Image (cartoon, rainbow over all chains, first blue to last red; front, side, top):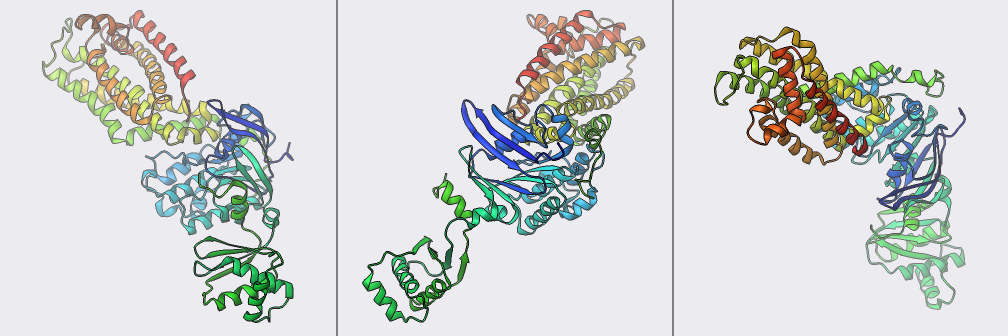
Length: 331
Length: 259
């Protein structure tokens, strides 16, 4: 049992009024690692995590946290598991540090409350009642409450929702420190950069099922590389694709604009590049990206008189992976 | 200090159960005593009723030979128990439920059982404060309680607390927080006026006599009056309170939704 993973979920099903919100979900979260559960709103992330926290009883499937059943063996698990709920779970009439001290009193050997408060910048509102805290302040307090008992597994449901950038980094630093100490961390999020920066392992969940999973680096490496540029909107993307195909065929960047125009004119070979304008002024070039591609792209933009304000080359972002998998329409 | 090197037995990682429950009790008590609206209903209102009804003749009472303050104080204590065990607790629990507090604390070593124990003990502590304050005022007004009635009165308070806390949890665990706020206050006023708490059921008009006597409010009022006027609690009141506790407790256990 000491070697059992932090969390193992197999074939988890949870129905509300006969509708399966979680529908055969599988997941493994290791100790000493950050596992992100990523998905659009309503994908079943929170419900799945609540089954792991023992707050909901699964309708089917198996959930094991540190090798134990979170419902039947709740008493043994509670001292070893820290939980940060999406809605905070903080009583509104109590002062911030008073709440943290109260939660700490439930453990035999809690973390030092003052040290933790300093880490997460809680002192500035230590004596403010929860009712008067901002969203980010509440989130930090809830995180402190989740880790004050020195848990072996921590569940964080949307931990940096409503946080300012400084708070987020304080939170991320703490999460990394916990991981270094061997704590298993499961976080749900729809913030791609959070998952990308923090997670060792990502599960993309939609309609109550895992639709993709893997080490974060693997997920990002999959698929073609891309060049992303920001410049003025309304450029001719087809023209750029043709220019890039021509440049790649010649394998040289010394070609003049005139030569590129020539290669567009002959236009017989299928273009190996796809250029899209994802939103006004934000373009993505996908294909077999090489140094030639980058040089040809900037040269073409210069020829168009379009000022380049941002250019990134390389792997996909987790956002691309996510949107490719779950679709780009809003829901 | 690393978490993984923590090789103490798992059960020792939580604070001992008495410390968890004591912490929760102190927490609940502080929350109630710090809340202005709750204090208004649990302490100030009963004291105002006690002073108002003993010093004036707004309500015509047959005190059966007892002084007005002797006759009214037991009922005011019963009302105080109802305000804390029922109204105050229902509202506090309903908002804690809405804010996810119940769920969060249920994931700490406290657990649901410890949370419930802390709530009940918190109610009893607040009731102790109420009894001290109300008794002090009553004694100033000339209250001469039947001294042999203290133990029976304690029994009545415990039974009443059980019944009304069950009702509070039933309400708080099934309705929206705003709904509970309205219903809990309204029910308290209705029971105070027509529930046989301050005025004995047999002195109430018409059908209300028969209704009030089987209500938990009427039973608690009669039990308190029995204790402090005659030194004993009527068996019928005990049966009624136990019956309500069993029914409401069963309902709360079945229907309470944590989220």
